[in-house]
Length: 89
Image (tube, rainbow, N blue to C red; front, top):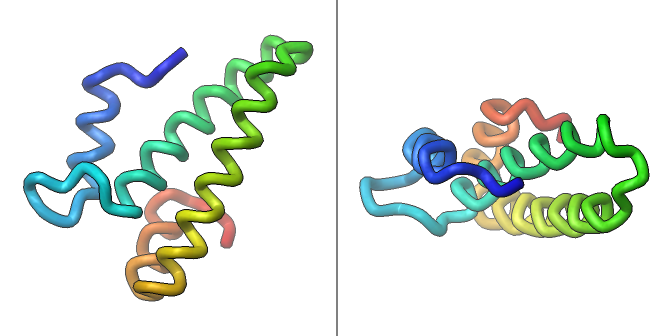
């Protein structure tokens, strides 16, 4: 159920700050969003998979913490990122 290497590389390429960036908050949030969307799709067909549901809740919490950090440190980057990802904050 993990994202493929090509999907991760593509996401990193779209949201990175510089050529070798792989750990900035923007990249981490984008990767978590891709993974959240994938697990949410899985749960649509497997409603009783509570182990995956718990993982989804934990990923959403981690993404929210990173979003709060980014909003505090760089508000303009935060606004741009949530617009690009289509998040409703």
